[in-house]
Length: 337
Image (cartoon, rainbow, N blue to C red; front, side):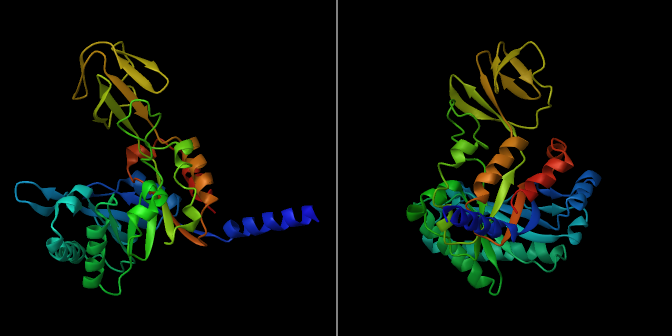
């Protein structure tokens, strides 16, 4: 009898995921949209038909004391016409903090008008969804949620989603639920970047588990995003100093540093590909390894109730893609079935 109950439970659990449909997608996060032949080839091979494209950022202009658009997208080829495009707007939390509540509607109108301008000037058609991306907090949720409501009022009959950080899931009672149709859970940037003791702030399954105990009860339907990117974190005098990005793979293959695990210890002052390093600096090498991505996907998979799930990889870039085999990327998508 006990065996029969166990078997029934396993079958039910398997059916929850076995019937799940996966929609594959990528994020495009650069300011000039063009796709290389390699990127087009990978999108085609992976059967990806959906791309989230960051249309622009919204940041706070301290001098003018205004929320202003920056890093507006520029399209230099028409490859986007072969894909389903989800326009995405990144809004800094600092902007939401500093804007006066009376200016929220003005900001909503400005965002709507700029979205329309980009869409119309590039003849982007059949948009299924718009997404707003902001790392809001308990202190900024009221203004941010008001902004979401105002934008949707200006664009009726349009689906909106919002990105959801892991801390917004764990502390949902404080941070609230954004008033949108769905969320997209960002399964990365989960550790304390500025803490020298952190192992990997981008992706660490043990850290992930601390945040998702109640994920299955989150009231919005959730899609997910997984990372493909990497960076190096610089500490000087044991204090976070900044990120080093786009360094060549062999940048540290010389005598000015020594390596211990994923940390480089700088032995003498040097200029490295435009970065000024000093003796005593410590650099933490953070990667999104295939093994860790799969581990993260497995943990998340057990918490999701969706029968339809969009899985996005961040982000679409030839240099990044070449660090993974086609079979690894295919396996990442398939692991969420």
